[in-house]
Image 1 (tube, rainbow, N blue to C red):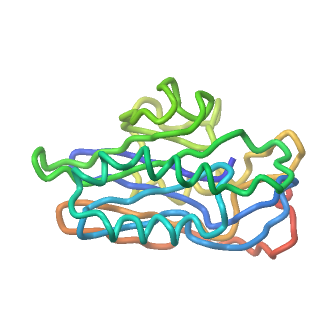
Image 2: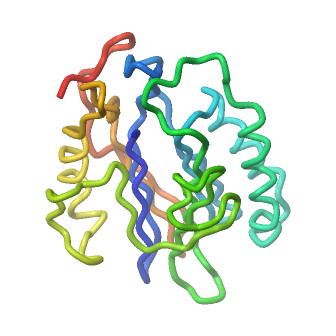
Image 3: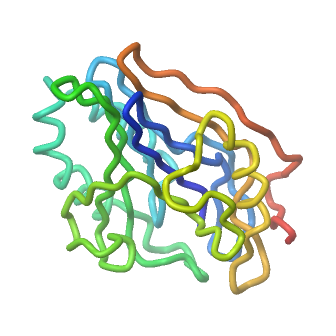
Length: 213
C-alpha cells in the first residue's frame, strides 16, 4: 500500500504521503503528488487504491468548484463515486486492494482545531465504517507499522517524527516482495494560518523499477 498517513491535533491536521505511482506488480509508473489542497476551503484530500493517474488534478478541480467547506463535505461521497466509476479497470491489480480511499484533512473554523477522516468504496479500506461513510480519526498510519511502531497511542509528532516514519514505511514489503513507498515523502499541514507543504525525503527511484526491500 502506498504511504498515506494522517493526523488530527488541536493545532492543525497533517497528511504525510509519498509520490510514487505503481503498476499492480510494483513497478513505478510515475511520480506525482497524491494530495490535493484548497486553502479557500481549508481542506486537503489524499487518494489511495485503484485511482486514475490524473485523480489529483480532478480532485483539485472539484475542490475549486465547491462554494464552501460544508457543501464540499455534503458532496464528498458523490466525488468518490465518480472517481470509482472512472478508475482504470484494464490494469492488472496484483496485490493492490479493491476500491479507492479518500483521506480528508481540514481546519474546522467553528472549533478551531484540525480534523481528519477517511471515506472508502469498500469495507476493507473503510476502516470499520460503511462504504461511502465518513469515518473520523486522529492518527492513521498507512502502511501499518505493525510491531515497529515507536509511537504508542497518539504520541506521534508529525513535524518531529515525519522523517523517521518515512524510513520505516519505506521498508514495508508487499506479498510480492516489493515495496510501495517511493519517490518523495511530503508533509502537508493545515491550520488556522492556511496550508503548507515540505519534502521530508527523496529516494533514488526510477520509473519502471520495483522498490527493493
